[in-house]
Length: 402
Image (cartoon, rainbow, N blue to C red):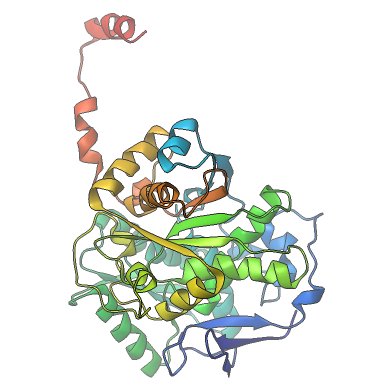
């Protein structure tokens, strides 16, 4: 195993790998730094992305029994209607809804579980709007650990109930905003000596970078020009980009993709900062959005994303409520049933393509982050397409719809 430590992502201050706190004292996010990546190699004989890229893991492998089969999700070419709607001729879809609990969070949960195993911790604790709590509870159950999940009151019950069904202890927290709740939970857990993991935790990001390795293989060593995904806590986008940075350090690729940061217009503190002259992240007012999975109004560590956007020329765009609802339906008509937050990427790409920021012939990957089964709030609109008939009407219906 390579030498490892945590470093702050902007000032690059080192910290022990075992550090409980997810952020540096100055508020910067932390990430894992591995020594000797220039010597890392891919074991192409083995099956499973974790096995093939084990040289990039900051843990000794050998805990396969803790896995639920996460990763190795399909990369699919978008159909003509989705390409036309996005204004992108070379559009691809990375379907993370195929992970065990229906979201990309499972990649990070496995690595967090390995961290708990190494540190001798019996509890997996997290704060979540839904997907991460669901995933954490499942992996805790798989390993025989206890799960503690703090969720905001607005989290959909269809996300909350499976957490408890897995055996997790779930607590709905009353707070002015999700950002306030997260901040208080992190500080309290630190004081209690409990490792509480959020969406921007350094170990969780180590799991997310394996999506990059899969794209590298699925495109046969070619790198997409752009990767678009919904962003809230920032860990997913920086984890994916970290994977490509490590592939470059190891000598497997010679360029990096540009990330496209997408948020709901009702809740877009990071996009607002990127598009402003100051680049300063300001707390966003609490507003309802159908994309409730990406509702961090003041994301800690968001300054790093603004910094990376400037350094690497990333793009950023928002989607309105009407655009999200429309895209949610269009993705379903293309065969992809996703939660509304995943649907933000389609209208965002359409705007970026229309104004010339993304060339129409660029190779673009959309990351679908969560299953539509996680949030059923928009499905009532489909009730008009459901009909009740008698047996005597079967022939009439079948003939009519030939």
